[in-house]
Image (tube, rainbow, N blue to C red; front, side, top):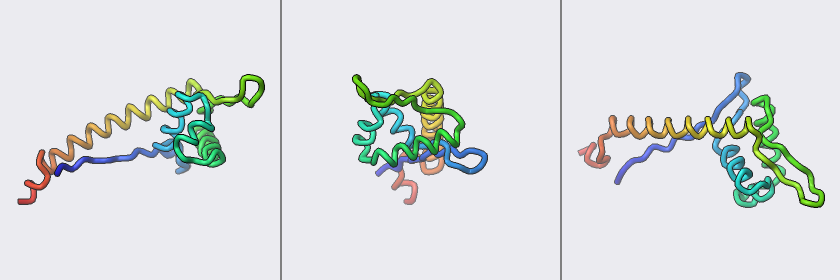
Length: 120
């Protein structure tokens, strides 16, 4: 058996409002690949209204738009991740990766490479 750390990063603004976390990051990645908030919601098993609420809350907390939305019409509506949204997502994923690497290193430092043997 081997132990593996799982650390989830949630970023909060000065007013202690949740600004960004794993849920909005995944939602944005799915929107980026599908071009649709509705499709991203379906893929995540999330209601459209909940997703809108999460996006609006994050945008308010962060002070910038994460998505540009277009309403229906001939070609249909859609959502696009903004330039600031892409920057936020990129920085968040880099931070997550660096923390994962550090957590793995710390775990090995504390418990060694073979978890069960540590307690014998």
